[in-house]
Length: 419
Length: 181
Image (cartoon, rainbow over all chains, first blue to last red; front, side, top):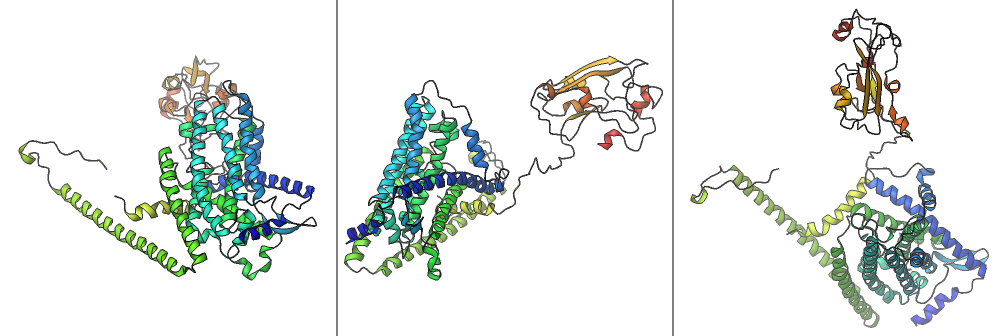
């Protein structure tokens, strides 16, 4: 039955004339490039605010053209190719990074079916029964670009950066894939438009909260962003895999990083936050919120909220050490994701076949949360009273006069920490 | 052993710090558009001062050049004559150059100067696009002539000899050039 529904859902795709496909493809390209320029500006402004600064505010209104000016400057720079570089691979690598970044957006739904220059067509370039898997596959091709770019540079820093990056992306893709499984189980489909349709009542970000959290953490790891930006770690690797790149080739890496950020945000929006559906029950008092071109607004609002989250992370957290990062991915995220999937599958099967009453589940969750809160409170109080006792004891020691013949032998005073 | 609160809540509380900071006062100065005055004793570009009659205070002793840790000052002294007098007393600084590519604006030269000829202004916009223009000549460094002053060379106007200048035994005008800065 599910399969039939999926087929019906995808029937809207594949009927567009060629010119509409071309317009859609070009639109996606332009939107992504503009979004990147905007994101770079926005990131700089927000991080600056978090550090008591203002950020770029000179070029254009509010400094919006700053990233454009930087891009033009970057394009006009000298294009260096190191002597030790493997030329073909070195030239190919940035392309291999940038192209998949754009391609993934072809299956992201921007909105419902709309009147597009007289044609009824969904605001989505294409869709397929395995669209999310397609996104994962294409994103993995991007890793080749990073690895090959690092390897072909003929520099140790680049090689280490590329290796780190690939190891990191592969490890976090496992957790990411596992987080997505729960969504597939609930939506009964892997096509993005179907998953959005399945979230008509509740977002999966709410009912599958652990999956959502795991996905958000792993998407930061996947895109090499702070605090997981180990491949670039300036202090250790001088920029990582793109150390030897300059000019437009470097710009391509940069562009790809920001588009990847937008891609994983768009995927998170689609899978967990209801895609293009209006947030905060706006559609309950405004019928038109989910029709026509309005959903594009909700979609980009949600994507930008994710981008803001990325920036917030960068402004708040320091970079992890490599072993901490790997331990977190393999020893925490993946086991938690596995356990959660088994739980989801169990609950799902129980509610499908045995009329499982959800209230018990919610009650257990509330009791557990309360327990953690109470324990935390008690623990904190105990720690504080212990600290007070220690301080009192230290003050007593301080007050006692120094006895040079403690234990019958002449002894020097204990070394004291200066304050 | 960190408590449960320290393990789970405190890392999240850090996000609140950065979020709150976004709405706090920013410390940025809009420099080229709005220039903030410097601190009064800021070490800026040097100035070679004059006596109230316009004679130069520099006596060409080179103590500033010797004090300079960056070797940025070059001085050549020369003797005053009765026909051509630039400063009270025997000697004056004929050549006086400060290389601002070397100068670290530490102010040791000012401490070394025995006649308070060399002081520092608050001017800090010293950037240029070539090396020659960053070597400031005596003409670039000399204090401007105030209304009561006269362009040297000219005889001593404030007393019979230099001791009147150094002891301050002359009728002071309303404001000396040092105070006017």
